[in-house]
Length: 383
Image (cartoon, rainbow, N blue to C red; front, side, top):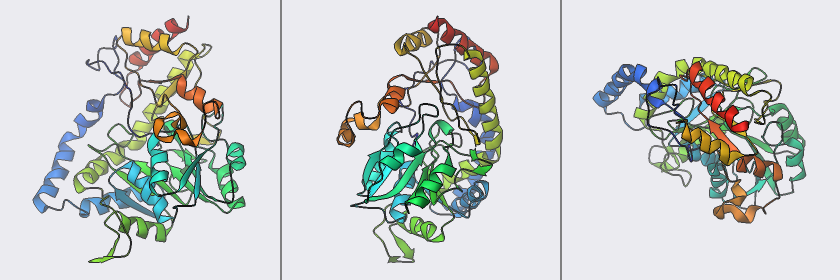
């Protein structure tokens, strides 16, 4: 789950100064919507419907429709969405869940929080996403689910993973924390598996003004269980059928998301244009980047690159006032918290991607001149 924006360097500058470029500019997105958001918040303040109020129900219906799915349940974070999704699918102690090692740690934390065991598989050197053949090689009699990650906003090949899950009678679940609005062969992410988890962290393509998340599914039972689990396991008034959590999406955040949702497709289209220009300008250099599979429509939450002289590139970007990030510099099995899940060198492609990762400025309002400025500096670093 591309959770937090980790290790980002962003100069404190004005966006219109293209000699310096921020990694992310939330003001550029939020300022034009401020009046509409304040009006929505005023309605909530007047009604005092702060918890599981009409604003939450309205957004859940809108986001389910947007994802072309039957159900959406709003929760308090993307991490909660992942964990409650898996709990709703009865994953727990004794079960194994296969996922990618080059994701944000929350993907793996969520698996571990259910009591299930995370199992890593290698990623494709072309897409930098889970490799179906590598996943199949990791399936055991304890495997219950495959948790694919649409990392950087690039859809994974859902056809191959659906076939794999069906072949081995496994659940197919999606970490869609970075994939709001993405499509695989025309179908929205969130409608191609048993369930999908989204994050609405402020920097996401669809971001709240704090933490937030959602589970999207076509399975009514999963929907009802997540809805109960997020609210202390309550299945009816004062009746608690499960051991749950306090994991609700609050009304103020839901209102922000409702205002932003109609703009998401146009924002994503701008991100794709930015990515195409980066690719054009960096063609023929030593920079490598993930190549989306045919049939995918990415939403480019992050534009990431690798380079054989990563430190030189980062230093030159910093010297020129250009923001950058690293998503994520350590494969999860190299993190102290999860070092028991794999040895150094066990997943060489994923480890190399992480060790050489640089995230470039990417947001819908980014200007063409800024992209050209970033690319000029990158090519100087590559010379």
